[in-house]
Image 1 (spheres, rainbow, N blue to C red):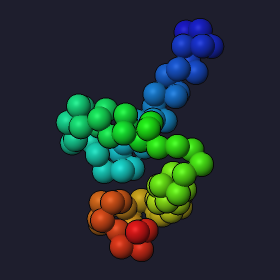
Image 2: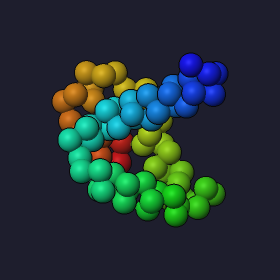
Image 3: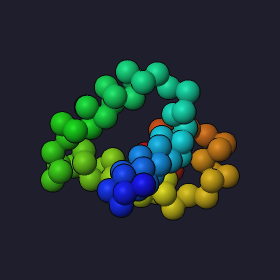
Length: 79
């Protein structure tokens, strides 16, 4: 396996982990892609970008048990 192929495999694995962490493993592929395309439209310096980034940072800091009990988008402390 080439170094580039290994790097791409690690990147895909890491991105898949984000889908798992968000509780979206059962979501439809088209739904996921549509959501990602919408996110791609958010300007990096906008208040919406900052808001979503904060939610993500809190999710990464949360323990796996905290995330197992409720979907990320519905956790009141993150909103």
